[in-house]
Length: 280
Image 1 (tube, rainbow, N blue to C red):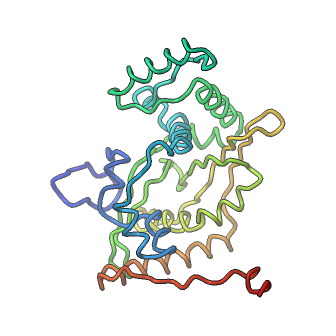
Image 2: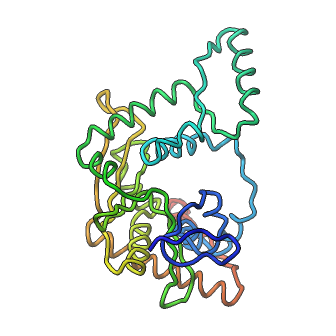
Image 3: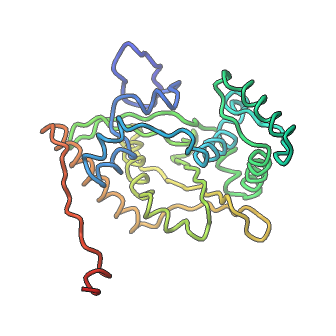
């Protein structure tokens, strides 16, 4: 079900097209990243809504966004990003050229990527398309960056997710992950709760389309291994999915209780580390 956007009304359920990333994150409904905050502490959920952001420290996120755009929405890459020329920062002339370039880009509203970052991104993109499973996922007809909205039957909370790609002809959701080191990807699944993402997105898909999808991670390493940028295409095993489902339900219930009671305080005791106890 594809629903046109009408900003004068509450967001409908189903697949909503046309929302920018900023509109999605500022809109109604609870998302997986917000449930991550709830799992940390309900107070963290409120804190993140108003805490200032140091934009100068978001450079690694820019690379991730650029890779997503290049793989999923390549036609929009030039509208969102601008590639800087290669400057010789060892000379004053090169430094002046860079300053002039940055000043000329200030009002364009685009993210600036360095010459080296662009070179690396193109190699990572070609590495992805060299992988047969990754290429198949990306070349299938589908909807990229659409927004799914549904009401949870147990808590009656409006939930939302934004799959990287929903295939049109198969019940498949694909999610692109830029990882610093492919050898650590399994650890990232636990650290960043990708198994909870699998559970929540799959639940939303089921509520809207009536079937459980295959949720597939397309992981791309940003570090070299034997001269190449590794690519892996992997679903999670059943036990990992079940663990993600338990955490998803737990955190959504906690969010619901906090919202209903308007009580977001959660003063969790700070536990003394094991090494300190042993030293004492």
